[in-house]
Image (cartoon, rainbow, N blue to C red; front, side):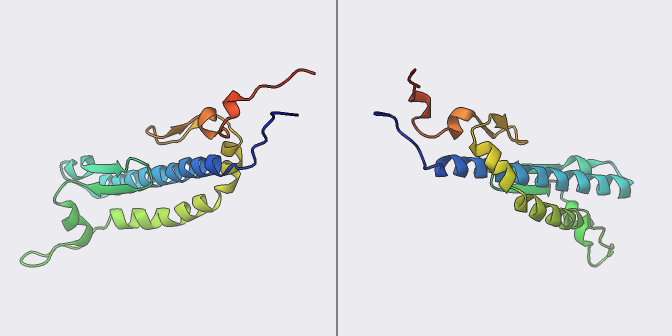
Length: 152
């Protein structure tokens, strides 16, 4: 057993697995909010469709932040209504979608433990976000790719 090195510190792999899993939940939640708000706009709109087409999600480089929004300037008027001189009633579409996904987000975050055990074991896979991936080499303990087994 001389020269064999046993690695007990799996925190780097767990941290990477946690990052991938959390980024995956954030991605799925943001896409769900956008899809649901687009559907509400589509169902309630009798206009050109410009509002629906302006919906976007933007992600941070590390995948830990997502912004869901609409570029059409009328989005604020539709969501909150307008005041004088010709008031319009609010027809919220983004806030209800975000509130609907709040519970799903919390549940998904609460159920990450099983996926962390699988990912930290070194399985290869990708997250739902195409910008984030992980491999067995990234999740393997440091030095794992250099170890060789001796024949007896």
